[in-house]
Each structure stands twice: as structure tokens, then as C-alpha cells.
Image (cartoon, rainbow, N blue to C red; front, side, top):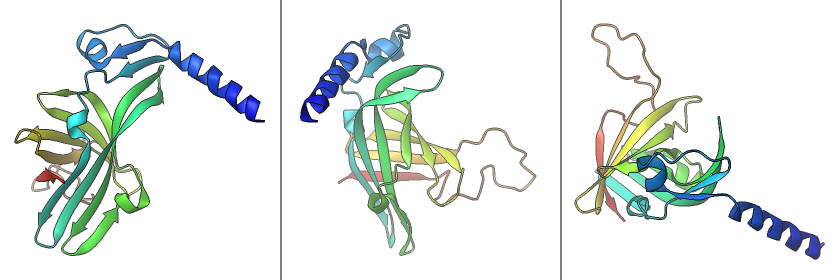
Length: 186
């Protein structure tokens, strides 16, 4: 059994090693052609400044975001490829009440949607942990020499009818949207 496991591990390693490795800048900036099973690797370490635990506290409300690096994540949509990415777990407390705690449950609330940062800003999809099928879009911008981030959540649901006097965003989200949070690196 041990020999079979070792053989499968070696075959898996060889198969992954045969996939072409393309850097983020080659793929996103230089429009490298797609190759089946390619690996888009963060060779330039452009994702590193976003990795870590970030916190915002105001009175008895707080937001904690733990952004982690995931190496060689497999994706399959129209094409099959591997990519380095970031995922985030969030804990949100409002007026002393824990609204949700992805740090405890391990739920990945943030998933990288625009992997190449532009002008210090990177984009994530946001899955609301309390409301089924509710998604948003988060931008995270590095500020103050990378010691802080600016977090901004907005809807991701496309066009919708907005009646006069109604807010321009969907009010049914489990955390504030259309509000900037400034978080410090912990």
C-alpha cells in the first residue's frame, strides 16, 4: 500500500510539473495565451502585502479579516488551470453582538476575483455567510505603506430597479456595505 501511495504521489508531481508555469505579470499584463492546465504563479509576490490579519475596532464593533495565500488552486470554468490566490475569513461584531465568525467556522467569505492588484487595490467576491445566495464585491486597497487596508463592500447583483427614495444598494446584507473600513495589520 505504501508503494502504491508513493507511486501515485510521484505521478501527480510529474503531471503538475509538466504544466506550463506563467507568472502573474506575463498572464495579466502581457496577455500570455491560455494553455490547458497552465499554472499562473505569483512569482513576483504581488499578493504578499495583502496576506495577514487585519483589524478595525470602533467602540464595541469590530471587523477582523484573515487573508491567506493558497498556492496552486485548481479552477475549472471554460478552461482548466491552476492559480495562486488569496482567500479571506471574516469575523464581524456589531454593537457587541457577533454577527458572524468565519475565523471560528473556517468559512472562506472572501475569494480573489481579480488576482492582479492594480494601484495597490485588489478585488474579491464576498459570499454573505448568513444569507443564502447573497454575493457582493469587495475592494481592498493598501494604504499607509501597506500597514493598513481600506475595505469596501458593495453589491454584485447587476442591474436592478431602484425606486425614488430607495437606497442604491440592497439593504439585506449581514454587514455594512457602501462603507469604508480602515483596518490595521495585526
